[in-house]
Image 1 (spheres, rainbow, N blue to C red):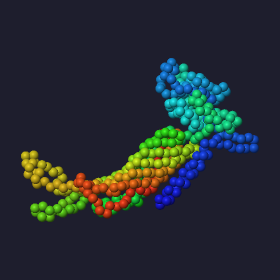
Image 2 (image 1 turned 45 degrees about the vertical axis):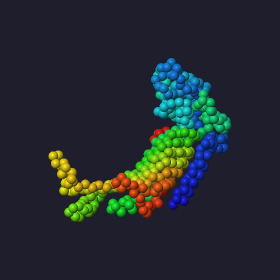
Image 3 (image 1 turned 90 degrees about the horizontal axis):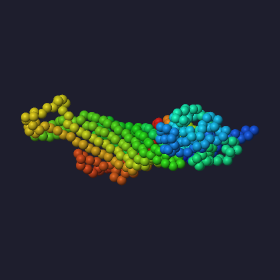
Image 4 (image 1 turned 30 degrees about the horizontal axis):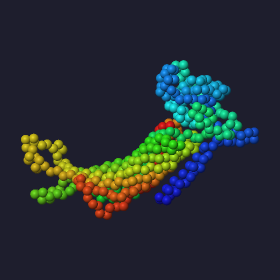
Length: 393
């Protein structure tokens, strides 16, 4: 089974890189008359960073935005009414925090796309529809990319935008080897059997862009299950054997917490694939609690004036058993995301959780560590499958 999962990851990564190579080139369609080239969005503006002095002089109320320092003659910006010293506040309700953010937003679009611009001019905020234009075909063939920060918004080679960061809610189905040993322990203590073929874990990943389509973040997965039964046990006092009722509870907790490193590749404007690695620590913990339970005493009372006799005659018995396993975890994974909106998407992942534990299962009974014979060599180890929602742009 492991070989199949690893092979699946390698094949998916190979196809991801194949698709990625296609997306960084300007797409060319040929007909009998001439080459038709699908171009990136072009505005025809020069921009500069917003200074505090300029913002105060214009009575601009925000601490973000970029300033149009010049407009190219006969460009889409000139024809649609953008002027020098206009401050671009937002595009499609996305705040233009700085020049880099402006570049990222523009790169999402093609020639002919429409956006809603929020502009500050002469003390007023103006909302306007803006249709992106295109450069000449001859210029497009040169694959020119403007790197000067004063010329943001001019033609650049198209690269599919993959976002700057997001939050991913990812419930995950995990098939781990140690579930069989956990089930054996619980059924040995008379609890109902759990599904040792796999568990559904809740989880999340929060990540931000740290390089060229490289994302670093934090991830966590967790699972919890509880159960309770009534059992009878025999103990001995001065009157001989006594049968007593006990309530036995268990709590099973499995979790993984770590860092996430992912390389994302845009296949199209809607689809983004990625491959990466989670690494961190995992823990499986089983807690058993057994308490004396007397059905005949619903509301036990103690006589304040006779505490010594009440305390001496009281019967109480309680046991606590804790069994846990800690592991170092690596989790290679591949993903495919479909963007429903600019800030909302559906994402699926396939991975393999690989754990390493040097100590095996550790046990404490009533607070004291005890040795385990026949300690099973099981690990937090197995394939994972998840699908959930992404939030962010």
